[in-house]
Length: 341
Image (cartoon, rainbow, N blue to C red):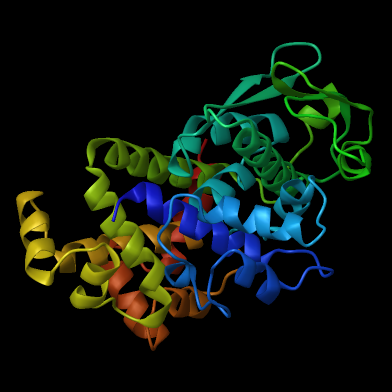
């Protein structure tokens, strides 16, 4: 199974989990051909249009065309792990957007952010390379909702926009967009562009921490380099493993089935790539641990649970083996960078 199928599965699961209260996720899932309830992304059918099935199903039940934006605003901070934590650890909104744009390929290559922080007013532009107008409208809105929702929640003060242009048809109601942006929205634009007041662009972030940002950025850079050098097959294996971490150490047979291979074929493909199943599981646990440690609100015991460890002590020992530091020392090392002259 390719990475292009696993990513929509995860996005569909996130969207179903964040539907507004007036939509029954079970009914939406049924119309989208997705079993309910879901224990995680792996329960979503492996189809390329899984996310868009969710949107179409919801709209057939009376949801407004602005639903992707509204759902995006409801997606919890931390859902996109290292990207969320890295952007949130920046000093201010503008720097957060710069880091987001640099590493957004870790989430999707369909969308591209362009940041113009030196311009007056400072702005961000979002482009979507989908050939389908419907998919462009949905993807742009969802990305705007998630990104601005997380940034607004992370900022010390609410964001203020001076101009918003969206590359989508005008919806029946402008309220969901204009209530959030606080200004009149221009629809039918060639590009999706949102301009901020200079004060908003320079607003500090409540999670801002230089040392942690530097640690997370190095991790994001390593992940991006690895992602660009690996085959789609290996990326799919990593994602299948990642999805199963909360259930304990993933089993070879389960992951092989998830990516559409026999166990022998999977072992051979990993061997040809110069690695092994056990090594990839360790790498995914280590990678997720570093990202989770970027969220100061997560206790070490909670992170251990998210990574499938039955006891926090087992996670602490594993993390020290990976990094030479305990989780708390890793966090403290990030803090010490911020205070180093």
